[in-house]
Length: 339
Image 1: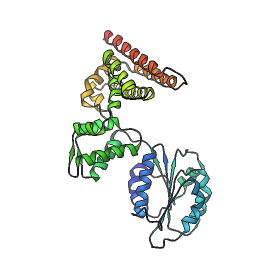
Image 2: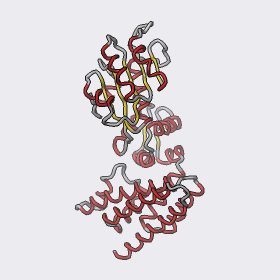
Image 3: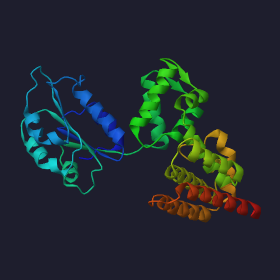
Image 4: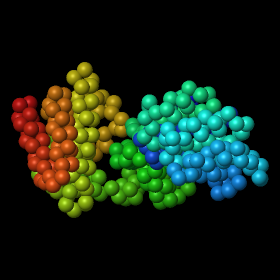
């Protein structure tokens, strides 16, 4: 059966009578984290060889054998499969017909919605199927707060907003950054904006964002300097720049559409999740005012075309990116003159 987002944490922390949990989706780090949570709910010591069996792709044929094995020291067992796919369906079906309380946990990143394993598990009440996708906005804010709270560490709202804006799509990478921050703050500590900026150290990411914000606001000098710094000094890839640009353009368009619908500029920005970092609100607001929703859609399409061009073998990707940044600046300056 499918496990909805509201029930996910409760299911992982207390699997109850479930015989199998299938974790699928795009966020491999979140899949691994949730698999670990479910396994520890059954056996807190994951190093216990009598109660925990971890099976890689080459060991999938041992699923039935491990499912029916007895825990010599007592307690419920865990059989944890990694890189699971349709090839394990038959073994899972046979295992579920056996008398056993073993919990089967399957990591299945990229499992398609029409896969035979997923279709079967979503219909079987002995199975819990949980999607693991990159978190954003309020969900990501809550996740970071929860991680820090577990270490008895607090964080200021502006510091949290800054971190959410820069968090990547992988939960494992986010947790690594949070653990670094928790170690810096110490138990009972509190993190401010400067603490987070000093610890996370995302210089390349900041340069990319500087380029995106400056370009869309029509600041040619700032955009050129930030883009060149990101691509030639900080080591960012042209693809990374195109994706930061595209993300920024999409956020501008959402805010612009809200403003076209009657919201004030400030209210339109406040509706965005994550919120616009307070030191960038002026630049974001300027871009919202000068770009129309249709112009932003066209800019997004051109940026997507740029990403495809950068992926062509032998393409002068850095030159293409710098030229695109200059073109966006020119368009912003032209539209600003019309206002």
